[in-house]
Amino acid sequence: MVQGRNNSQETVRVDFRFRRELAQKLEGNLASFCYQCGACVGDCPATTYSGTFNPREIMLKVLYGLGEELLTEDSILWQCTNCYNCHERCPQEVKPVEVIISLKNMLADRGIIPPSAQKIIETFETTGRTTPISSAVHKQRERFGLPPLQPVPMDEIRALIEPASKGGDTA
Ligand code: SF4
Ligand code: SF4
Image (cartoon, rainbow, N blue to C red; front, side, top):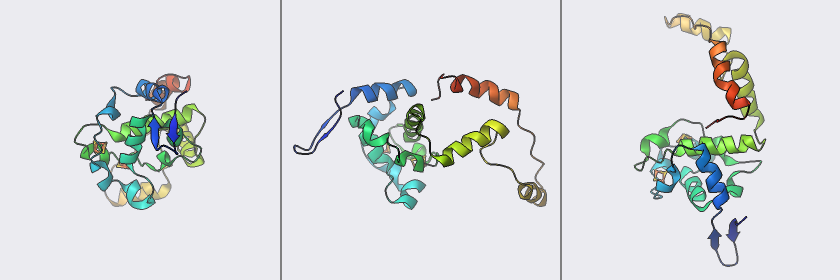
């Protein structure tokens, strides 16, 4: 495999295997249209609060095929909140968030899932929601005059997630 940086000469050798693997997770070759303008960075909450996360830099690493810098045990990718602000801002319709979600799927394929994400997965699999609904939530809804939350149709949720858990398309 050809991958990585050659520090002595400051050159980058593109890892095309990583790029092919990512392309299989995404509809279209989205990252290739990134022209590094940085518009996705300005309104990114993960950038604001982490100080190290930068969607433009992630897109650059994707362009170079630097998968091994992104797909690590302590990957910064999990700092992305999936808020989609970058999707709204990008003039090239790169959809950085969807590239990042696909990279997270690649991490999961390698068995790299942080405990916080694992907890969300388990809650979703058992309740159909990503966070538990406490009695305080029900009371607050009542106070604001909102209707009670309806039960989640778990049979439909299971029908959707079963193919993915058996190794189907998770992108
Ligand atoms: S989806 Fe992720 S990368 Fe995009 S703006 Fe939100 S936190 Fe940042
Ligand atoms: S806004 Fe779009 S084109 Fe600009 S750096 Fe971000 S992903 Fe690339």
